Image (cartoon, rainbow, N blue to C red; front, side):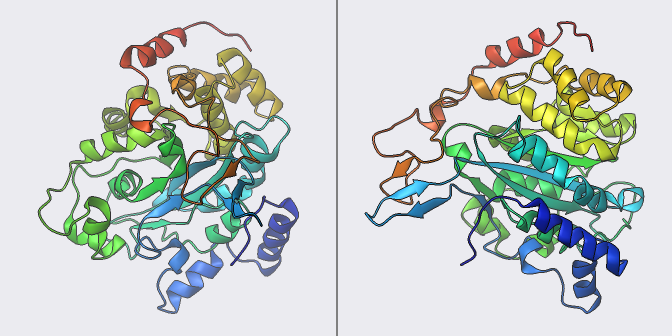
Length: 380
């Protein structure tokens, strides 16, 4: 069994150098496999590995029969990239900025998610007429993140103007299980692109992407259920995820479609796609309560963002629910690295108990109050 540890920049650099030396794309391995008719690698095929993706606490067995939480509670961060048409190079961009993602979120001195065991997944959103409408890696904490990026297959095509983002929303809502949700906290989800999705799910498309067992995996039965609407799927997604659409471009139709699903405050304009690492870190820092609007500007400037793009970014995120994660009762109770558990199936360590996740949601007035406070002015 492969041991999971922390991300190594040296390993990443070696992989990046090999790609450059060979003069091939980051996703060369995945593309070659597809060209040979082998389909997607199982690690990024949504129909494989039990269909359901998981982000779980890593509990290491000890000699006395107990288990230790080696790196902290698992925090999932997933980014699904539109790779149709002009968005076709997004995985290349994601690979290039990965060291900045790791520095700003995970391993840097002031990393936003430093207290967690951050696990990253990368997805590709395409069109229902493409060979692979949706692809999705596993949640990984180490260099499997960049290796699995290389297994993706961006087709860079798309059959019509509308892309199939709704497939990804379904996957996050119904086909993902995370340890962090058991504490009543939420993971982070970022679909990124320049378009909107369809307003319904097509059974044949969903089964082609996730396999014939998709309904049983999602709803517990392959019969006797009604397909949810896309709006219902988005509502369920928001119960377990802090979701933000990162919009490339300024299409009003795109903004409106996502605003209706996630809320207008969760539609964030990217100054440019290459800023995805800084923008994600800023959003997560604000949601975790690690940053406020004033310190967010300073954070972005220290990360190397220009003054102009910093101003644009802070303006774009000023409406999000700042500090929402901190309003959950278990925010300060989650187990930290080194905690000891009696069983691998336990969520709480020995001698510790938190509030049931079902009773851990903040009240609606609290969330609205947070949004109102975001109107305070700031200066860079």
